[in-house]
Image (cartoon, rainbow, N blue to C red):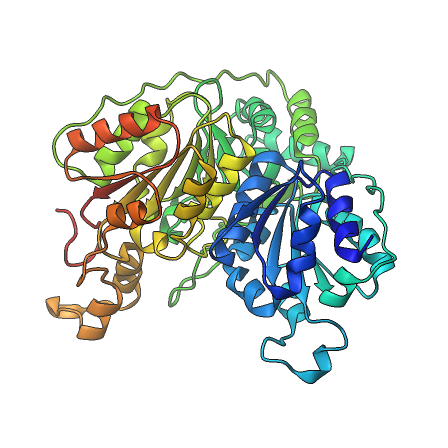
Length: 525
């Protein structure tokens, strides 16, 4: 058995069943090894950012790593943005990156690069395999590292000669590491803060945004604490039967208003909140100065156990999820608000919503609060171009569940190749592209950072760099070119009919929703 065969066989024994791949010459023995594992699914991706984003979506929905298969440093580099998002989501991912043969590296061939340095920027664990007999051992270690709580990107670099050399054998899986229990005295100290009667909020993140933790957190919040979650949760369970959780605002002034007056902030799987960007003469830390921050459970801790224990220590800590009404199907103009109403009215049971709608999605949380039970996946690391690949991975992870991808037009242009993979694999994904012909979030940020006094218009560079027209992007045409059925909607009635059709038919569908931007010269009034 050669090194590549040992790696693939070991990963299969460790539960890795899917590869999102864009291989090259250095990975051909890994490709051949995949033929020896008929139960493993190899998914071709036309761009490495699709492969890495799909692995993120798969890991978020299963809790198990998929593998990527990337070609040398440039291939890894093309996938870095979505590996950054996966790192911020604490998603288990196993990166397989081929490299030049060890005897070829000193020749400085054109594709030679520092793969270890590139991998280190987004990986919690990096290993370069040095000989074929160690290949299986390193593969098992990669899975163990990726799945160590709370989850991380683990990158295994496999030189071509290690892949083709004999003398390798599979390695057994390593024991899985459970989340760390939270000490009793930590729980007791947080309970004392909650009993103080002072204004308190609980900020949830990581595994604490899943149903078991949410229900326990709602019991705690029933004592009078406010229940919040991070601005961009990796996977938030929502809808009927679950407590409603308020997401922390994106803009710092909104988040500060939510946290204003607090004397205690309890972190459960979440980080201390900071603003997404810096602004002149504005502090980046969002917590009020006189607020005490308590960490009940860190990212690698057992948040469910800690919340349940905390609820048991508090008096009368019971809570019931309030029923929320669903909006009526909208009529009239097509706007971000009417798109949200249609999604809220028709979102099916068990849907997985991938949200990269950005500014146009402002109304989505309220409109979908009364929908049936569903999952909501967000842009954890802020690197746009995540939505379409994330939907690929979620659909492959959960083939019995519909996926709805709500996608901004500027973000969609980063990874449109994902549409081809959706068509190739027959994935049940409904994509709504908010086509406002603008980087609307940048329009907003420009106005915040570079005010134009006296009503002066922006200069040519500012207009051109934030605008997506001249020519207009044709997302329906782009989708059809990739093999995905598509339609364009310009009214709320058209959108509602097209969304119903897409949700009721198998396979991928794109709806190009022509909505006005919220900011900039063409914004809605």
